Image (cartoon, rainbow, N blue to C red; front, top):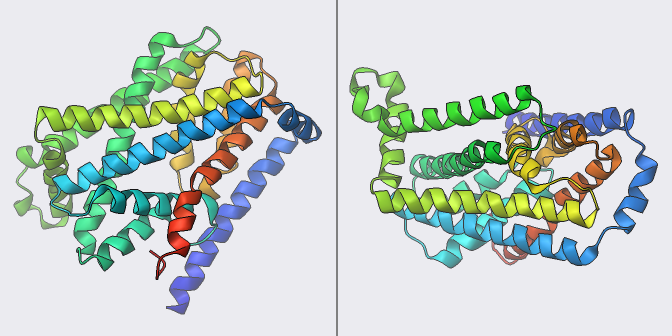
Length: 310
C-alpha cells in the first residue's frame, strides 16, 4: 500500500513539474507582465456567459453518461449521475491529487453494488462517445477553416478525425468479425466491442448519443470563443471549431495536471498563426482553465456533503 501511495505521489509530482516547466518555457517566448492588464480589460459579462456555457456542457455530459450506463443495465436517476459527474469533474480539474474523476465515478458505482469491471466498461465507453463528438466537429469544421491555417494543419486535423472515427466504427462491429473465444488474451477487447455496440444498438440511441456528444463539445468550444471575444482576441469562430478539438485531444494526454501548460502551449502555438497576440491567447487559455475549475464547484459541494471520498 505504501508503495502504491508513493507511486501515485510520484506521478502527481511529475505532472505538476511538467506543467510548471511548460509555463516556464512559454515565459521565454511571452511577456507575462502583460497578463494582469489583459485580465483586467476583459469583458466580465461575457466571461459570465462563458461560464454558463461550460456549466451546461458538463450537465449535458452527465446526462449522456447516464444514457450510456442505462444502456449497459445500470440503474440510478439523473440526479445521481449529475452529482457524481460533477464530483468527478471537480477532482479532475481542481485537485492535484492521485484520485482522478474517473476513479471517483468508479468508487461511487462500486459503493452502489456494481462490479468494478462493468463500471470500467461504462466509464471508458463514455469517454469514447465523447471523442466521437469531438472528432466529428473537427471533420466538419474543416469546411470553415480560416485562411491562415496551413495545409499541414488541415491535413493533420482530417487524418486524426477520419482515422479516429474509422477506428470507432471498427470497434463497433469487431465482436461480429472475430471469435474472441479463440483468443483469451483479447477477450476484453471483444467484450468492450459488445458493450459499445449495445450503447448504439438502435439508430435512435446512436443519433441521440452522437448528437449529445457534439453539443457538449460545441458548448465548450463556444465557451472558449466567448472568452476570446471578451479579451478582444479577434479570431473567427471557425478557427476555434477547427483547432480547439486538437487542443482538447492534447490536454487529454496524462502528462500534465488537469491539462495546465499543455493547453496554454497548444493554444499559443496554433492560434498565434492568426497574428493574434501570444500574450492575449495565453490569457484566454488561463481564463478558460479558471472557468473549468469554477464550473466544477457544484461537484465540490456534493463532495463535502457526502460521507466518503465518492
